[in-house]
Every structure is written in structure tokens, then in C-alpha cells.
Image (tube, rainbow, N blue to C red; front, top):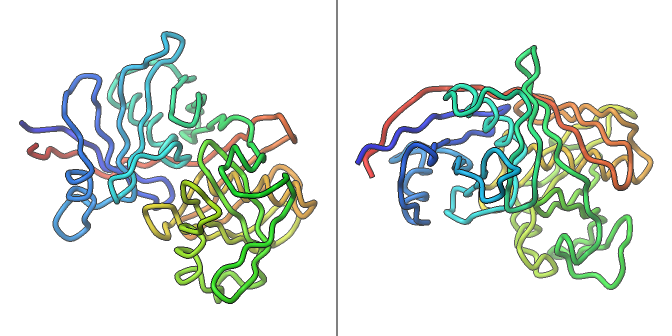
Length: 276
């Protein structure tokens, strides 16, 4: 059987996107790992799957699988590509698209200028909601990583994030500390490890070591988590421009209990077919 797919990216965070509304396929972790290999497969950070919704109030179900084959709750850059994909494929004519995810419902808006705004929902900070092992909720926590003690903020954007403030993002050892934080035993389900350098009250730089994918050129939920952490700590003021290696995302957050709004591009690279 030939399965149609689209290769897309959001600021360099790249995806294989498949429509399982009009097509049918059985996915396995082994198959996803084969497809994700950049030498022998298609190559991607995440696989995005479009499915019919389980909830009649939703337009679609959105599933995300990392390159290692594990399913995760949320992906902000993927959400923007998801919106572009379902419009391009004429699966919907709506400009406001309601989508169910493993991390909760989100709303996608395709703007007239081609940019896509995602209502990512309200961030969560309770250790149990991250999940993160801590006795009480706090703005920052001390995390022992190897022989170092890091001050981190934790945020759930439907998936778990840690945010560490650094003085010099270019020289910070993301490649070595990222995987240690990702699999730290205090994060029961692993974590996306973000490292943020403040520029001014409305601008910051960010690198993210993503759970199950390694460091990527961009992470939408990571940008949301970093902006929220910076605002809570009093370092940043909404709106915030988060500069990632692949480009910038515009983040707005009005405060606790309010949704995080993320705006950025989504790009189609090519269409293809793969034999299953």
C-alpha cells in the first residue's frame, strides 16, 4: 500500500504529516523510527497524524510521535503545520480550527497574512501537572544535574518543559546538559529542556533539547514555556519575541489562568508517497 504524506517545517522543526482521515494505516514505533531516519528514511523531528475527532465538538484529532517512535502530548510548531496541512488538503475550509490532542484541546487560526496563531491553552505550574517531583509549587527549583546545581522553572504547555536562564546561549553546554535534564529522575515522563538568554523585556533567545528528538531548530511549546517562565519571574513583559535557531515566534500571555497565544509560520516542503 502507498501512503501519501507531506514534508513540512515550522522554523526548521521538521515533520512528516499524514492524513488518516481519508487514508488508513497501522503505525508502530519501529515504522516511525525507520521513517524518521535522515539517512535511510524520510527524516523528521516528529510525525504528525490527522485523524477524525473523538469529540463531536472538535474538527480533528491531532497526534504527535517523536523520532524515537514515542507518542507525545503536544507540539506547537507542529500545530501550525497541522493547520496549514488540513487547509491545503481541503479537509476543512475553516480558518478557526478546533483540535483535540493528548494534552488537551487547542484552537488554530489561519491568518490572512499566512501566519498561524495557536491558542495553546493556559499553562500549568503544579508539580503534579508537569509532572515533576517537588513538595510544593515554586517559581524556580534547584535541580542537581551531574555535579552542577541548576535553577529551573517548570511549565506544562500540554507537555512538560523546564526553562533554565543562561548568560551566553552560544557557549552553554546544551548538547551535554540537555539529555541529562530530559531524562532526570525528578521528571516522571521526561521533559523538554529549554535554555533561555534574555535580550530585553520583550525579546529572548532560546535553545531546546526536545524529549525524544534531541536539540531542534525550533520548539513552539518550548517558546511558550520560556516566555511564560520569563514573565512569571518578572524578566519579560508580553508580547514576547522568542528567537530560536530556526527563526522567531511571537508569544502573548496575559497572566495566570489565561491562554498562551503563539504566532508563526508553517511551510510545506514537498509531497510524497511511501510504501507501507
